[in-house]
Amino acid sequence: MLTALRTYVTPPSTLAGRLSVQSLLFATGEGAFLAGSAVYFGVILGLSLGQVGIGLTVAAIASFLVAVPAGKLVDRFGPKRMWSLSAVLQGALFLAWPWIDSFPQFIALAVVMELAGSLGGAAHAAYVLDVLPPAERVESRAYMYSALNVGFSIGAFLSGGAIAFGSDVLRWAPILTAVLFLVNAAAILRLPNASHDVRSSEPRRKPEGPPAIRNRSWLAVTFLTGVLWSNQVLLHTVIPLWLVIETDAPHELVALLFATNTVMCIVLPRLTSRGIRDVDTALRAVRLSAIFFALTCLVTLATHETVGWVTIVLFFVGHIVLTWAELYLSASGWTFEAELMDPRRRGDYQGVSELGNTLGRFWAPAVYGFLAMEWGAFGWLTIAAIVGAAAAAMHPATRAGRRYLEQHVPADVLADARAGAPEDAPPPPTTLTEPLDPGTTVTDTPMPR
Image 1 (cartoon, one colour):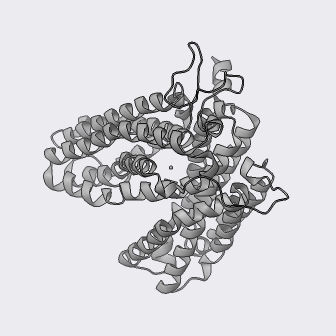
Image 2 (image 1 turned 90 degrees about the vertical axis):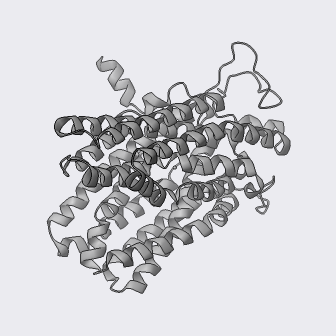
């Protein structure tokens, strides 16, 4: 028992352990600011809720617009360099928060931070796909996902401490985040170079292959992934509002529900990622995610008619089921990233991924909130149907994505696109749809920030 537990909590490899440290540093710094950001913006900066909403919306639009150019920069200059540069920029920008004292300054800083974060997101994802051996990608990213959630939990604890000590301490809390980001930037440079970081004597050239924006199947996959990730809208917005407005559950229950989700996301990612080896098994995970999402809708709907402890138990059941939907969707997304991207343009594809994901989920808070609160039972069933339709549409979209790669990427390059092909496995088939020899096994790998 103890041996199995020790094995489970041990990183899959030394490299996965080092990457998990980066995830921990990033999430601790990010969480230390984000968890208390609403208080910071309102108390320290003196902004109204409407001003904060406008500023964050403008910043999100800016991030959306630069997602594709940021991905191209990653391919041009290398993912590790761009990842480290992003961490340096974000660290330096966090140092500016204590001196912000007006709404225009808030918007300007929020926009620049989102731009730097967009570059970092594309660079980090491209680097991980580049540097991890194909057979280790899913398990390693699951371990990193656990470390990320541990970091956010530590950051939230630090943020709560800053709030408890009062406004004088809270004003200077971003300095801690800045330090963690700058330490992270230095640690990133100590990681091994990915293949796209290696410099040659020849001048850098534009990556080969058609731009990712022309791959409509990839846009479709990322759009549908964004729709599926609307489970986070239920988690963070719709279910808490439903609990407070439509049920007799104590309002303090919301914090316990979030804690349940956090603990599961720390402990279970490696378990839910097992067996996801290729696109087909990733699609199975998508189906499971959609089923769990639908069950959450049904369980939450039932709380409208229950009272007392029954309501409380149902909310816990719903949150546990919704977290399973999140975990299975994470593992499937890692696989799609590895299998359906052109390996020569991973930064470009990550930028387009951010574009598609944003289009797939930006509408969800308003739509889901209206359906749940105004349409009642029919609204919850409609929410479940939306995600079910997205899961069904993912099957033809991924098949189209595989055909696109066969047509536009050389067969030898596609070998790297197979997420789970062990290094000692037989040569890959000439097309992604051709079956492997009997007995050959493959293991696959492919987010909200």
